[in-house]
Image (tube, rainbow, N blue to C red; front, side):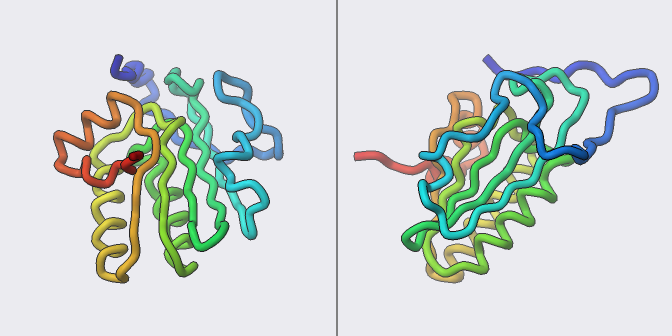
Length: 161
């Protein structure tokens, strides 16, 4: 099932806002991300949050976090990767590219991706290839997998043998 977006309100689409507290907004995927997705005892971890008033599968919450362990930088994305949230993901990718090693983008909790997200992934792949690094997407949902297939980016999906 493909997530749908609600119609814009009379005042127009709502802009994302940065939460003012350290607490995560309540919702389907509220609370801390599982430690397995943060790499256990990660050497460096950081996260950014944006909330919106849209009623998506993650109840409007968007989170992106990074961690590094044993030469693998992992970026975990929760929510919708679209024009509004793309700058946060780009910033986290820049952070990850500053650390030597492989890159993994965990999209287990990503409910939607538009062309902005596809563009970010394509640029990240080109940069990783130029730098001689590996980049893989982990656990895409069927709709995200289909979007990647249509765009010709399904080769980025992590293979598990």
